[in-house]
Length: 116
Image 1 (cartoon, rainbow, N blue to C red):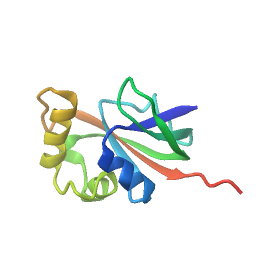
Image 2 (image 1 turned 90 degrees about the vertical axis):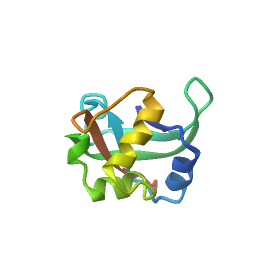
Image 3 (image 1 turned 45 degrees about the horizontal axis):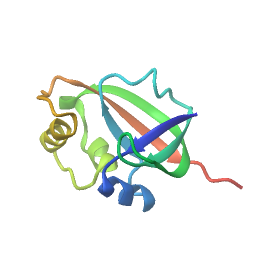
Image 4 (image 1 turned 180 degrees about the vertical axis):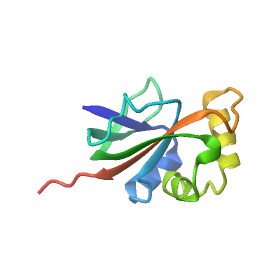
């Protein structure tokens, strides 16, 4: 099974409250996270212990440029980020490199799997 891990404490809060059901990842990740696959949603820093929150299904995977991201994508990724430029600046901090609106991202929509 694959894992979608989130490092930001803010993302952890959004995931626990089920306000976040989308993630934007740098580059083309379509082969890494195929649609209809099951993943664990986890939180934790890179190279440290992770905490498993819940299983989820990958519903949709879209390959876009930063400039093609919609307000719907942004709202489901993080409601606090209102513009593509804000997300781009956030990614530059995370990845510690310069990015442009032409850079490719993968938009992954997922939904929780509830047992029973």
